[in-house]
Image (cartoon, rainbow over all chains, first blue to last red; front, side, top):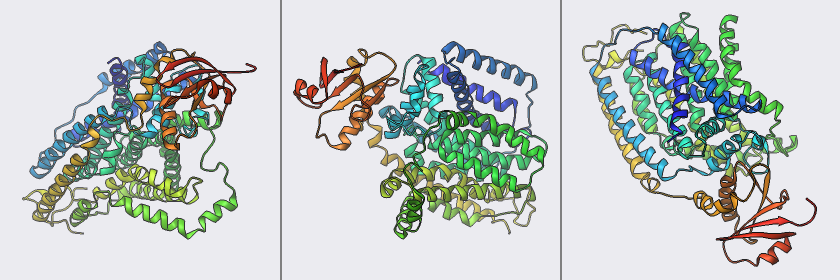
Length: 455
Length: 141
């Protein structure tokens, strides 16, 4: 069980980073702010540890004692700072219906989590790509002498894929002194749990507990998310970073100008998304483009970039210095790409696959919830809504565009990846949908429909 | 837009909870088979088979990999997948793709090792049993 301590150290460092540079200072309800810090810490910690490990690896210092020295020093300094500066907040009032929904959500979470642990233990090596790509590359990254095997084209490990998840697993294996299967299992399940936590806590802060629990129930009912949670792929970590980045834009909007950290963390999460998978690079590009299109004050743009740029460094190193070859454009000619774009059969195949896969999602639940939709025009959120909607829509279009020009056999490519790329943006869509649900007061018998809204 | 009435909100919540319970029940039922121990790609089995030869190959560098001819593509890919994972952080590459000095033979059934080695310009270094053989490439190092 020597792998548990390094794993816990990464999570602790992530939590302390979030607690010190608090993106939800003064946010209510208190439980949601705490859960958001915990969940963001659980995804930021692996990102931080992975970046540190990759940096040490590139300079030839990836040894257990150097990793521990850097990480324990950082965690120690952050802990001291946090203990001195932490503040307390008042508790929020409790309402009956949201409280019942919370109970049902928690029961479902425990039930689903228990089943996922059971499946993970029964299938410790995950699905095909976990062994062929993510964990194989992690094993290469544990070897200081030969870690550049990660960009070798021979083992078909997709050398152009970013290394955040593999580096984190490698770092934990290195500290454990072996390759226990528990490390990728814990990594996968942590990101799955963090995704639930981010969804529920972000919605509770920006809309209310009832909307938050509906968001949680939708995610727990999502069959593809449940299936891929134990696969040990990078899609759920990527979904976490996507959703955290967008949720932080809303939290930033709610906080107004009071706290700069939500925007910094939105930058960090989009940078970490780019470091997790190729789709994350597109996400970071679209998000940045739409953010700048809003013509934010330079001070705010600097905050976003201050978070994003450090998180992008490992990716820049991989792409520019290691020159990892890209599979998408390898062997493709302009004429060939244009012929694919002009082929109506490809549109039909892609459209059919999209429709087939979408039916795996809990649309019936959302259809019922549309009866409650209560969108309100709030100027504070205008920019966040605009950026989030365009980024999510842009991501979906980018996936379809990649299928259009893919050099791989299209039916095979669609059948092996469409459901996975959809789960990457699904939580963002659920967040945007549930944000339109009514606030908690509406579920209160004493509430009158003509009462003014709080938000 | 006016807010929904509390009556509607509670009724919709109840329907959503029922749908959710039905969904989660289905997920639980459908995942029953996956909760039973399985090694669908044979990764753990390959790891166990290859332990002997792994300790005979030095850390660092690449090692060639061959399996019997006429193996179907998926079975061959599964065997290579498990072998590559077991060998990492050493690199295991198909010998036909990138010839190496040390080569692992991974066979499912009996094979004429001497004939096989001659065919690929190799010599047998050690037979580990269970279809696993270490070869050395003939000719210049």
